[in-house]
Length: 270
Image 1 (cartoon, rainbow, N blue to C red):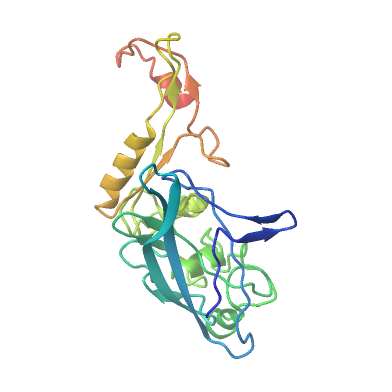
Image 2 (tube, rainbow, N blue to C red):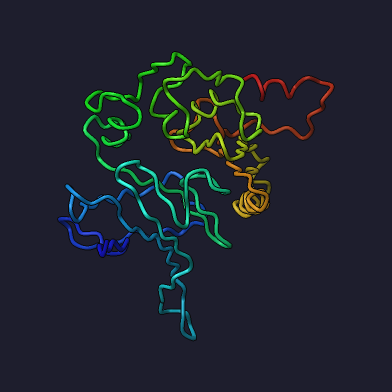
């Protein structure tokens, strides 16, 4: 809608700064941008473009830098339904709110501030769901199937019709819908295959043998290989706000662990 946000022009009381990511994986380093609609009363849609810029060193000595556009997607957001289409759409091949390009991928969400702050647009509550737009549906479960209205609406289920989510697994990734719901915070999508891997480290034996960690390059290779087959791989190596007993633990060093000894059970049970 002719409004532009550039991550290197962030104003604050202390002046102008920028958000520049220096890592290949920016998971949980999300950024939130809020803009007013041009005409809040009559506007039905907004045109949105998300652009990835990469800063590259230039010149003989590489002392100067230049920002280059690497990829972008254009969306049309519908204020009535809370859905969007264009470069990404509801339940497309790479998952709603996920754009998978040749060299970059973007996880994003587009939403509006609604009256009861449950994420469901006012128009949708009144005209489609027939719910109360002044009462948050984030914990309400009118059909009694164990999954609240907000999640069922987000993924296209009817919140007034009972679904046995404990057995439903539409993407056949081994995570039933109830598990997908509880894993929503970590990007779980019931219609896009997800694999979650916990990565711990093992203590080294001294100065010449440092602690053994999974290399960042190794994670990238694994994630990219799975993405080529439409599978999202998430490696928990100590996520901030990650699952209880998640990855990132530094374990005792063992030269050899035998399957027959039963020693491996301590890593699975604790």
